[in-house]
Amino acid sequence: MSALRLRAVDAGYAGRPVVRGVTAEVPDGGWLAIVGPNGAGKSTLLKAIAGLVHHQGEILLHDRPVTSTGRRELARTLGFSPQSPAMPDGLTVTDYVLLGRTPHLGALAREGAQDLSIVDEVLARLDLADLAGRRLHTLSGGERQRTVLARVLAQQTGVLLLDEPTTGLDIGHAQALLELVDRLRRADGTTVVTTLHDLSFAAQYADRLLLLDGGDVAAEGPPAEVLTAERIRRHYAAEAEILTSADGHPVVVPVRPAPPG
Image (cartoon, rainbow, N blue to C red; front, top):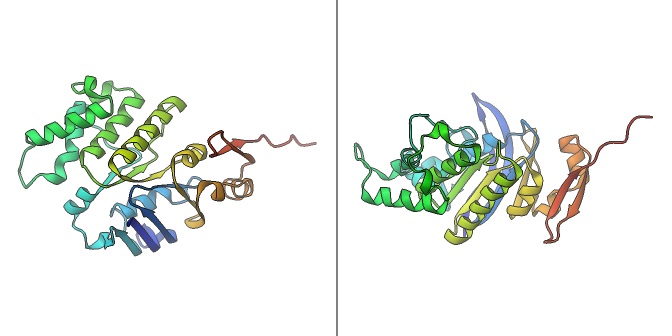
């Protein structure tokens, strides 16, 4: 069964389309990485899936249009982590992660023992239990990114939308975060859709890539089919070699152009 389907989706702001004619499908438990150069429309497409940006065409979550799904119900089905989430300095890690339980609370209801138990479990899975009482402003970049992920996981949704989850992280912390997402995906059967700048990471973790450029779909398919030197040159204006890792994944290696003369 498909967790997510996009059919001829246009999305944008104030009547101006930023992405056009996007068609894609993600099965239950799959991982789709949306890639492309700066300004390609990656974040806009992710926001459209989350119901935050107006769209035309069809976006179906488990065969149900997001437009016919109420905000609270959508938040119980789909967890969205923006590229630059608001993280109030005065909150502790536990306070912030508890915000993920909001869609499950009734009007004027407060978090109960079950909500706190879910948050404790999420913090333990993400190795954040020792930081539960820490203020957000005291966290390192990697700790903040894991805390953002913890808030989304506390929603207990079947679909995760992560907008550039490795932004600002060094290669070790970025790899650790993506490994964590992949372990959770395999353990829980969660469907993952991410935007990623690092093409090699995208190829290692995602089942399929959707390459956008100028708001249009330039390619879609398995990483080995989408990532070619010619496409990197055309859509990123960069020279690169596509190598193959020991486990068979494409690796994009920038190649310095020959000096003039």
